[in-house]
Image (cartoon, rainbow, N blue to C red; front, side):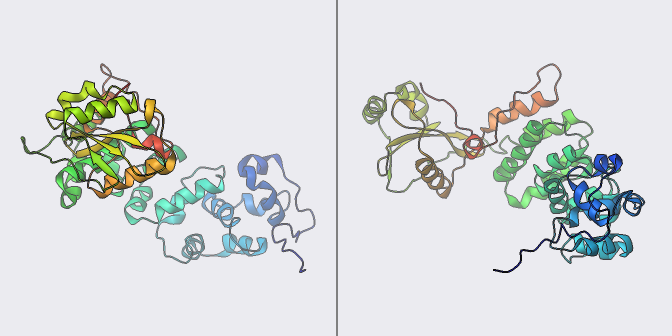
Length: 353
């Protein structure tokens, strides 16, 4: 068996590994490796501009010798250092943007986020013109579609993941309602907002239909499902699943809701689709006694619904209301739902008990 590689632990300069309190404070988790490349008192590292110190921390995660990292960040031209960081791709303005990350070094995952955002030219333009780049700001930007990652929109978004997620959802739904060809126009309109309240109210307005009275036929799901089409069948399904589906007879009769039963599979399930301005959406999917469905069953349902042209996620009505609450002192604060898991993002409600 060969000798294992120990690139990081090679000690080229005698006193390697000894860390001054200043290096430990500035470098955090990177301090030990940096103390090997620049032994105490670390003068060569501490004398570097902050952009190059950040570059050194980023390169520690790459398959490079510590001596090579030290040489690149100490002697390389800005463009060459940037190419190392971006895996050979040209990245104008990257080093200047790195200088705006602050004096303390970031974690490797946070650098990955920064570089992934900078790899998109539209987002890079925003970062190039940002005086101080903060990690919470990057995490917020990541949540937004690329077309609305622009300064005139970003400046009006509250420092809240819930607000950013709702604005992102609103943009995607507005594009769904108006068509992909209008996506850039929607973004340009939002750029004209003069305040946070106006931006979020514009987003809510764009969730309204342009035309009234359009009839939406319920989607046709695969043969594994059957649609409840009369009151007798609805009563039978309600009895089988022991829920209150019969309370929604009027909604089903007037075309506001469509109910289906999954009859083929590991477990039977009943699901309800609701009509809203962004089309039919999956509003509920449950087993008997309103039990949660297994992941495989729920994924099968979601796939069938989306293939049929319907969607998952928040209702346009609830989203429009919450958009206003995010920025209205009288109506707010908005109670944004948790959307951390795949199930959370489906935004399934409790239509029946």
